Amino acid sequence: MNKAKNQNSSNTMFVEKTKIRTPLEYIKQNYIALIITGVTLLVLLVMTFFDVATRETVASFALEEYQVGQISDKTIVADKTLPATEADPIYIVKGEKVIRKGFPITEEGYAKLKKIADSPTYIDFRAFANAFLYLLLLVFFALFLYSSYMMDRKVKPKEMVFLAVSYVIVYTVCLFIKKLPAFYSQFCLATVIPSTFFVILVTILFDSKSALRFSILISLGIFFACSFRPVPSIFQLASSITAIRVVRKTEKRTDMVFASILLSILNVIYLFALSIIVSDETEFSIIYLLYVAANALISGIFALGFLTPLELMLNTASVFRLMDLSDTNSSLMRKMMITCPGTYNHSLMVATLAENACNAIGANSLLARVGGYYHDIGKTDIPEYFVENQQGQNPHNELNPRLSYSIIKSHVKKGIEKANQMRFPHEVVDIIASHHGNDLIKFFHYKAEQSEEHDIPLEEFSYPGPLPSSKEAAVVMLADTVEAACKTLEKPSYERLEKFIHTLVMAKLENHQLDECPLKFSDLDIIEKSFVNILAGYYHSRIKYPDQKDPDAQNPSEKAIPAPSVENDKKDAEKKESKAESEDKKETKDKVRKKKGKNEK
Figure 1 (cartoon, helix red, strand yellow):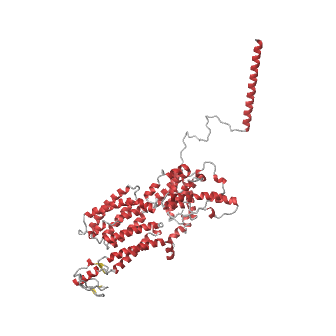
Figure 2 (cartoon, one colour):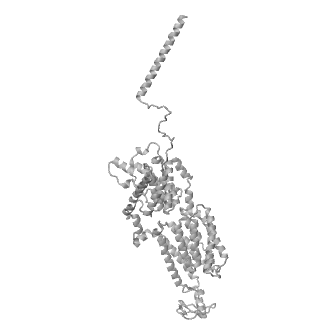
Figure 3 (cartoon, one colour):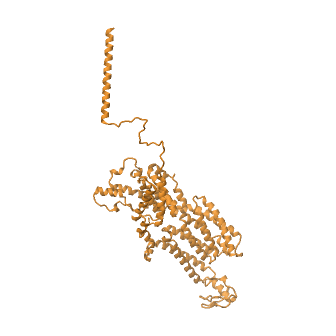
């Protein structure tokens, strides 16, 4: 295996990750992500602008941070002329120094600061510029976290849109709810932020990797939106990470209720611990513990209610949808079992191999199992044209090789059509579409060359693709190849299976079938070992029982039945003739005796 690694270390599967691309190439490949990110940044800036316009700030500092008699740490200059009114007779001239650095703030200076902050025509553009820089850094950080290199997969547009909408909602709630007097305390503010609700949805609809990155980004956004107060940000980060850990283990929808209860208890512990660390008795109240418990419980129940419509709308491979599809008693699986039992048993074995291999490498084992079950559903319409379902004559013996190739190739297209008709998740459809990649159908290619007596391009007898783009799709491809090929292996011992499976996997690698998936060489090692362990147990030998008999052997208690032949037929005919002659002679003698008896009388 090490030699193979050295020989294939330049494979494009790994070059793609380390290849330095120009900015133009990056924009071409990620223009959808850039558009979604740009629109999100624009919406966040609009929300921030309204916040700054309605905030009592001067030079990006809140008015409550200034006091009469306080030594000013900066000089603030009025950028606009504000005339005196009946309600406020103070007059401010553009360019006037309202307060001076190093001098105490007078009552007149504080009144002018208040007038500037309360003025509807005054917008603290410095505070807005700070917000713009902070959000811009967050955008770049998000692009890095959700890049293909960091995620080991390409994030689809529907996921990006959902994450963007969720982020905008949480950020906007934080911006404007902090203005309410009831939520002046940072502990109280932490109890109403709905980030846990969206983190639960992201974990179930997509995966825990995406949810973890979303939790980090949303905690940074909350930190800025809550005026850099630490408690809401730290609490939401702890609560979100806990929610990911709790929810990712759920397999039934009813488990969400128990997960919500557990999350409520842990949230109470987190907020109580933060109250001890911050030790601000003026801001903390015991009732806030009840609020955070209710927040977690409501978030879990609401997430359960929103899951079904979101699953249908986004068509994602959530754990609950995959659990439903993994039921082998479904109508489609039962049809497969009845119409093409060979394909059915092959699919079950492929699903077992793929699930265990994905479990070993840290991929989505449930998605791999469902993909293994349905990867060959395109064979259900014409099962007799596939060797695992043939019990008599092979119909391909009477067909042209090109027609046979078209029939074999069509099962991929028909499988995609069936999956789309049944609204399968896109991830499952991708596995069905790519489980053969663009590999060559060797048997009919060779047969066509023999019949046409000339070389035929490989593309004319290859599957249309695409290549697997995820770990799960690549593992299902390898499991499909290994399971089918190992049935032809004589004396499948552990050592022979190990060598044979390694040869099959390396053949896929050398044929560039794994170029677009994020598998590593270390993953291939683990996958091979997983396949060998499963198949060695499947093909294990047994001790022959003492009284066990070969069903093809002759039973000694029964007389041997001679095979029919021409000589035997002649002998049987002669016996019948001689028997008939002897019966005729006997009848003649009886007649003669009867006549003699009559004459004597």
